[in-house]
Image 1: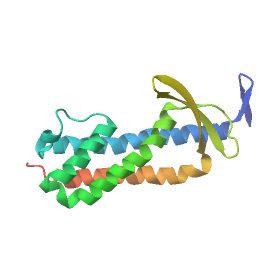
Image 2 (image 1 turned 30 degrees about the vertical axis):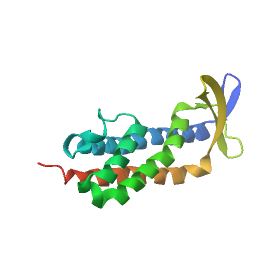
Image 3 (image 1 turned 120 degrees about the vertical axis):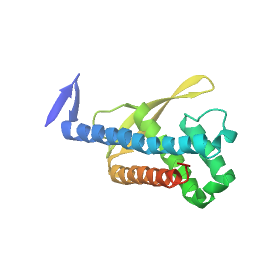
Length: 167
């Protein structure tokens, strides 16, 4: 049933689907990154990671750099290097999509050719640049699977590393 908001028409069901999709990204990314946080904290605090960072990494990029360096240089982590490196690649690959969806603004309340259009301000050389991107409705099932897998992989690796922590 069409609804109206300030003269703009949209389908409630379509917009609800978008909100559910973006909400899912927020919740599932939070779960995945929390597992990454636990992994980084264990390595930093108890497995020799302090030699590779002055402070516990907090930003995603610094956490991933830290994890990569530790996987390459801490012998106790050697059995987990391939899995850890793959996890880093997956976080890097999905982070831009997540960032765009979370920090972009919906530019159209109705899908256009099977996608919602977003506008995103990017900063380049101290200037804002507006960039549009499309969130393809058909891509959401694959993104859902990728995010669930990311969270599962991060949690599994954190549990494995937990076994290395002196009790």
